[in-house]
Amino acid sequence: MMKNKIIFVACDTSNLSEIKKIIKKIQTKDLKIVPKFGLQFFYSKNGRKFLENFKKDFWLDLKINDIPQTALSAVNSLKDLKRCKYITVHANGGLEMLKLIKKKAKSINKDLKVLVVTILTSLNNKLLKEIGHTKSVEQLVLKQAGLIKKSGCDGIVCSAQEAKMVRKKFKKLYIITPGIRLPGDSADDQSRVMTPSNAFKNKVSGIVMGRSLIKGDIKNNIKRLIDHLNK
Ligand code: C5P
Image (cartoon, rainbow, N blue to C red; front, top):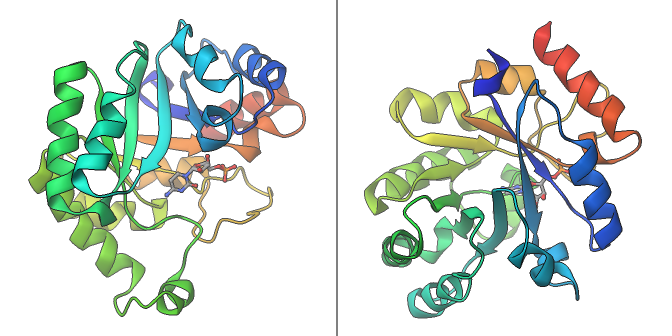
């Protein structure tokens, strides 16, 4: 039952032995776990080399955001990463960029999913205003969800707080939500947070968990997550 819930574990460190430790300790037969690597590791000296030879499927979360041709070429440069099954781009890049990236991803590997980041989970209405937006988080996420559907990309990345609303309008969209914390854990720099079970109640397809799992005793954190989801 819990196997249909995907947990993407954010392996956010540039230290290779830490990465290896995380990957080893997050393994469990009770959950479908997929590691996610971001800018911190990819930019590090050992990061890319490690991912070239990595033997498990992973998500490369580079959140590409550039003009269409540059974004497209960036995706093309990832084509040797055979086990990379998910990449991320920003919806801000616009429809044309999303369409081109989806087309390129498909030509590289038909199993490569393009996930589109909407409003970062670290932002809220006040912070959006500060950068010049006049619409609310919810309005922007819903608008961008429509754009994602139109582009043919595979999924949306938003916070679990918007997931219910997005699911209502887009029944089949793949919805992934970061900003997830086990009950009692600190929100850190995230603004729009939710617990794993509440996120799944909002019909998300998968959740992203970093610090709640990888800080402290990783095995115990995984056990806490399983117990929490079984409640
Ligand atoms: O440690 P924490 O669980 O907050 O980590 C969240 C992870 O999800 C980070 O790797 C971050 O880059 C990523 N992420 C996010 N918000 C998005 C997209 C990705 O926090 N909108």
